[in-house]
Amino acid sequence: MSEDSTNSPPKLFYWISGAALVWNLLGVMAYVAQVTMTPEALATLPDGQRELYENMPSWATAAFAIAVNAGALGCLLLVLRKALAIPVLILSMAGVVVQMIHNFLLSDALSVMGPSSAIGPLVVVFIGAYLIWFANDAKGKGWIS
Image 1 (cartoon, helix red, strand yellow):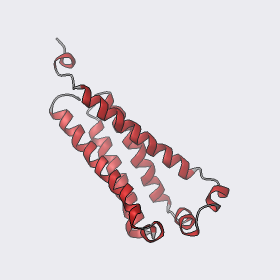
Image 2 (cartoon, helix red, strand yellow):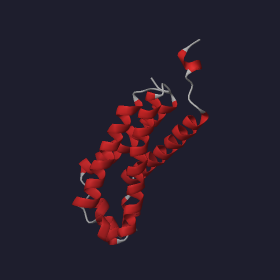
Image 3 (cartoon, one colour):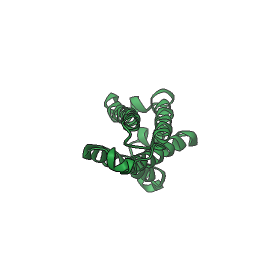
Image 4 (cartoon, rainbow, N blue to C red):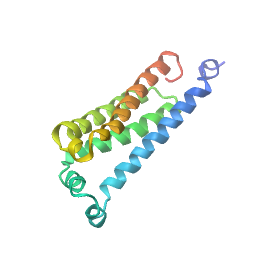
């Protein structure tokens, strides 16, 4: 009997991994939308928001790209039951942290967008941390290798 047939993860593993993959693909779509925003679309934003986009340094944009692309790849690796998901998800979280440092410490995003704008990023951090824990737990249970 193969290890896969004796140590198969429960269906919930696939539901969580699949939902996380969809979540991260939405992040990829948000990244693509941001970096392909036309000057006309940018001009329709309120001044403060437009200035945030225009003044975003390339390293913060790169952190966004790393966060969402590594997150999507890490979740795909989870679905495929590969332990490589763990370091890839950690890389994604590093991208998230760098992006948040820019958004909340080095830019004026909170004052421009308002305090409630911190809710979404906090959810992103929580989900990223959960996925790292989830992948480590799955490895410990032998569900990924």
